[in-house]
Structure formats: C-alpha cells, structure tokens
Length: 427
Image 1 (tube, one colour):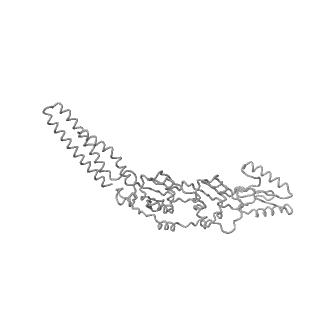
Image 2: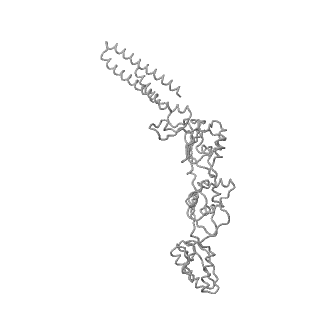
Image 3: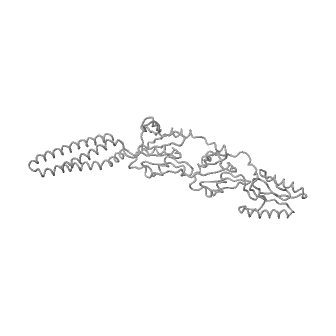
C-alpha cells in the first residue's frame, strides 16, 4: 500500500513538471507570434493561462490528497489494539491510549476460558433441602369453617360470604376472610389473630372457643382461597403476572407452567430470581447438564422470577460480513463464534480478510480483551465452534488490503480525472 502510494506520488510529480513545461512552451510560442498577430495572441494567451492554471490547481489538489491519505477509509483493526482513556491533553498521545493485548484463539485458550468460568452455586444456594414447610395463614386468605349440626353458624358464614363477595369480587369462593391485620372473626369465637398460624391451629382454636358454648362441637376448617402469598413471573412467558402460593410448595418449573410456559424468544440460560433484595442468575440448561434438578428450587412469598429475552444477550457482528446483524443466543442460551458468523451470512468472500477475524470483549467492570482467529482454513471453524461468546461481544471481520486500496482509489479518481483533463486542455 505504501509503495503504491509512493509510486503514484512520483507519477503526479512527473505530471506536474510535464504540465508546467507544456504551459511554458505554449507561452513561448505565443510570445513569438505576438509580433505578427498581437491581437490574436492576447486572446489565446489568456485561454492558455487559464488552462495551465486549472491543470496545476487540479494536480496540486491531487498531490495534497495523496499526502494526507495515509490510511484507507472505514474501520480497520490495528495491532496492538488501543483504547482511549481520556488522560493527557492529546488524545493520540501514549498517555491517552491504553494498549489492549490481542490473544490468539486456539485450543489452549478455549480450555483456559472454560476452566476460568465462575462456578454456578445458585442451585446449592436456592435448592430446597428437607421437607417443605407447612402453609401459614396470612391476610387475605379465605377460610371455610363448618360446625356440624349447627346450621345457624353456617348461615352466619353465608351472610359474611355475601358481604365479602360484594367487596371482593375476585374471591373464588365464599368464606371468612382474614383481614389485613391478620384477624379472623367468627360467632362465639370472637376476633382472634390467626396470621402466621397453620390451619390445624385455627381449627383447634375454634373448637376450644365453641366448646364453651356447645357440647362437643364438630368443627372443620379449611382454606378455600389462597391470597396471602404470591410470586411474580415476568418476561418471556405466555402470561406474565402474579401466581398464588397454596399449600403445595411452588417450584420454579410450576411457576413457569402456571404462566403458560416459555415463549419462543425466552433465554432459559438467563433467568433471574430476585429474593430479599438479591438477584440470582439461573441457567437451566447448565443445571440439567450438571445433574441438578431445577424443580427442587421452591419459590417463596414475594419472589420475582424474570425470564430474559434472547435479544438482551445479543452479540454484534460487523465488518466484512454478508449481513451485519445482532446475533442472538440459541434456545439453550449458548452462542458460539461460528453461530454468530452464520447468522451474519458468513464472511464476505469478495472483501473480507479471513485471517483478520476478531472478538472484542469489554463487559462493564472488566478489563477489555481482544481475541484473534485466523480463519483462512476451514479447519479453523472447529475453534470457532468451540469459542463461546458472551453478552455484548463484538465480532469484527477486517477487510483485505486490495479492498482498502480500491476504496482509496475510488476517493482519488475524481481528482485524478480532473487533473488529467486540465492537462489535456493545455495542449
């Protein structure tokens, strides 16, 4: 590239000298004719002076363009890679540029990256151990209290059910509602605080209070509507929203199933569980591959489960590819380098330099990294098929030298044509 520009500059200099000689020669001839044809000489002299001046201006502009054009237009990957730091007064100074090492992609690097991956302890942290806890009552739960052989108490329940239904049309069944303070009201029992108690404890309490009025009352208490405990499922599920927790502990899979299941755009490797102000990342395919059962993760009241969309973890593919795109992970959450190139329609066979394929990684809070793959041989796709990309990686395919040269010439040809045209006009 540099040698060609030097040769082209030599050609321009020679053209300048030739144009100048032609202009001076033409002026001398016209000067000789001036003695015989003075009037005619004045007209032609002005025309030739303008033609020579135009040629000189065009050629000088071309020479100036060549002098300032040291690189081809467009993006280009340089080695070593540098990153502006904002330090120093000059943005191009060494202080303002941080050098980023370029690491070759090979089998050893792939093994090192796999070994360095942080272990996923989510299942060990959230996985349930022992027997599930009994359901405890809370505000909003609806109870059905039956006292056998005492229809007057059943009527009282019906009256309260009607009033409750009028106020709470969303209640699926009539009954006695535990108020927001955790209290339950029942005839001959009074107002008792039952929030936090098990249903068996409430039945025992009601039996004891009614025994003071009735002889050996037969009491049955059951929950007819669970409303005090909920989990929230958001994101890429068919029916996002709140899901009530009943006396059967709700697992992660049950919450997704009640929400209609995953959408086709769901990334099952990027589920997030928010509990007690902390976020836990759940990678279901990886957990299954390790023999861990995601169904053993039981959700608690107030948990938020979010299923991330695949687009949120995309990878940007740009440069000399057939179709620059934002590549999205597969359904298992993984995205290999070969997958990203395939989604971009492969490298452009006419303009790409296959030995200049780069992966630029700079996640927030981490040191920027650049990886390089020489993809001239189809065998290199074995490495590309094992190199796993991360969210927001940039895959860049550089152009070849001939394409950069062509782009420079496309910028210079208009100036060259103008200079040659001006030189012809001076003849």
